[in-house]
Image (tube, rainbow, N blue to C red):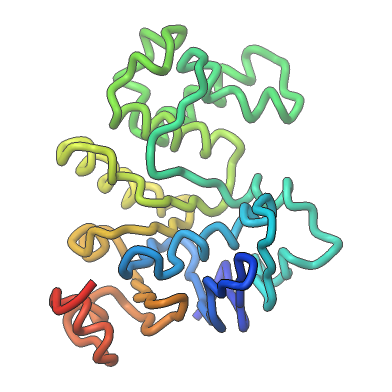
Length: 251
């Protein structure tokens, strides 16, 4: 399996509490990998390891390795800011900046030193098109982002993540605050994104995992219980714990 991310013996503690235990995972490029499992099992903690967001949490200690394109991102020579440029993040609740639609998308490029308006215009248009939002907002780019609906705000946040040309998009429960119609649009978008990106999604919604993902990992109490093709995980799980969760016997 050709992997874009690989974890080897990954452990993580918040103070004395161990949140991840010996995680070994390989993520395929240009595929959707879903992380499922009950609340508190370590799903969000795991994806935050992939772009070093746990670095900002006091008392957090990480042991093991996370390879991105063959290089351990926790090596002392690696700049966490550069990692986050390549591995973007979309959060549970839409979090647009209190700026215009245009400035939300242009923000990352401006921060990286892009000043030319024509260049910024192209980046904004391309990112909004890639996030399937351009047609809805192209005539109101200078209106406040907060005027958008919840689903539009989440697609705007995806456009903002895409604007700095990452290779991987991490999504932490991206539809949990959205209605079914907005959720369907995000799910359709996820399947489109893998033409150019790798997507890793945390979801409590097993139907969503079955609909959008190519691979699924089931986690329980900080451990990776089972990982495989989504069809196999849902139709023929190898582990009893996985089967119990999939069939609703617990969790």
